[in-house]
Length: 422
Image 1 (cartoon, helix red, strand yellow):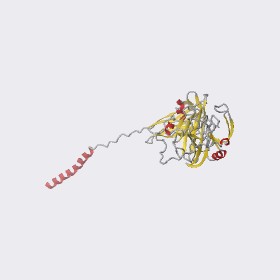
Image 2 (image 1 turned 120 degrees about the vertical axis):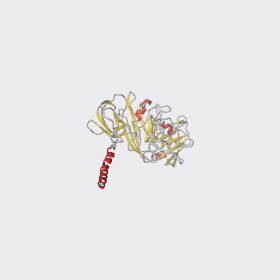
Image 3 (image 1 turned 30 degrees about the vertical axis):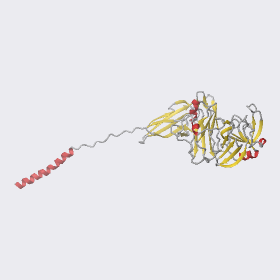
Image 4 (image 1 turned 180 degrees about the vertical axis):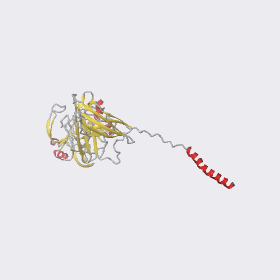
C-alpha cells in the first residue's frame, strides 16, 4: 500500500509540471512593432506657372525643389515636338537651345526624385507673348564660326545702344561660353556698356575649342528695349604668336611660342597723333584697304594701304608704309599707326591671326578701355570687377613657376566705328 501511494504522488508531480510551464508562457508580452514611417515625396514648383500667358521669348524653365533633386525635364511645343534645352551649370534653370516662337504654347514636364526614390512630377503649359514692338538693342558677336584665332582672342559682343548698368546682369545671364578642354573664364563690361568681353584668367591654350551663344531674342532689356537675335559660333584657338613694340627702340619683336623669330623696324605716331601704349588684340586683317580721315580731328587725308591689321576702333593699324621706310627704326612720323616696310608687312600677314596679342610700350598716351578689344589691358583682379554677376573666387591666373613666355596669340570680325589710320 505504501508503494502505490508513492507512485501516485510521483505521477501527480509529473502531471503538474506542464501546468507550471504553461503559466510562464501565458505571461509573455507580444513584441511591439514600430509604426511604419511615411516618407514624403519631393515638393516641386515650376516657372513659368501653368497657364501663364505673355511669357517672354527668352523664357527658361525654372524648377524649385525641396527634399529631392531634378531628374528629368522635357519641353514640347503644341505639336508635341520636343524642344531642346540645356541646364545651367548650377541647375537653376533649363534654357531652350533656340528662341521660343511668339504666341505659341509650350508644355514643360519636370520630375524630381527624393533620396527614398519617391518622385514628384509637375506639368506647366504656358503661352509666349507676341513679337515685341519695343525697339531692339542691336548686338554684334565679334567671334565668327569655323575660324582659327590667336590665344589672346576675347569673345566680344557689342551693343547699340549700350546696356545700362541696371540691365547688365539680365543680359549677362543669357551669354554662354563653353570650352573644350575646359578653361573657364568670366565676362566683363566696358564702363559705358557698349561692349562685354569674355576671357579666361590666362591666355587660351592652343587647340582649345570655344563655343559661344548670345541668346538675346526677345529678352527684356530694361523697361524700353528688347534683345534682337540669338547668335552662335564655334571656333578653335591656334598656335601662340605675339608682337611687342617698343617706342624707345623703334623695333617690333615677333614671337612664336615665346621665341623671337624676327625684329622689324617701325615708325609710330608722331607727338601730335601718338600711338597708344597697352595690350591690344589684332581685330581685322586686310590685304588692301583705304584710310579716309576727312572730317576727323588731325585727319583730312585719303590713302590706299596694303597688308593692314586693325588694333583699335579709333584707327590704329599695323600696315605697310613704303613712304616711311627711311624713318622706320629711327623716328615717329605716322598718324598713330605702326608703319613697317612693304616686305615686312607682307611677311607679317602670313604669321599673325586675328586674336594675336600686340603690346606697345613707351608712347605718350595710354590705350583707352573699349578702344578695340581691350580685355587684356587690365589685371585679372580689375577685369572681374566689370562682371555684372558674381565670379568664383577660385577663378584666378595660374601662379608663374617660371618666367612667363613673352606673350601669346589667329578670323575676321565686322569693322568697327572708324576706318581711319596712318
